[in-house]
Image (cartoon, rainbow, N blue to C red; front, side, top):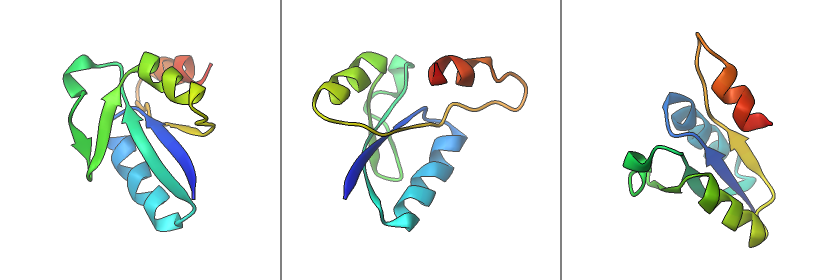
Length: 84
């Protein structure tokens, strides 16, 4: 299976973990969020490993796929920033 990471640890991440698992195509390598208070938590058993710096380190180890789980119904700027 191909590794994939999730950036963001809110409600969208919950949905995406479920969707990715149900597809059966990817292994979730971890969840990343810039909020230091979330580090060490998990979403459905998937660990929150750190923020952007740790995600970049995973890229250096060969990670190629990341899902942007940052969401907001009222302000999409944070999601757009993560995308870019």
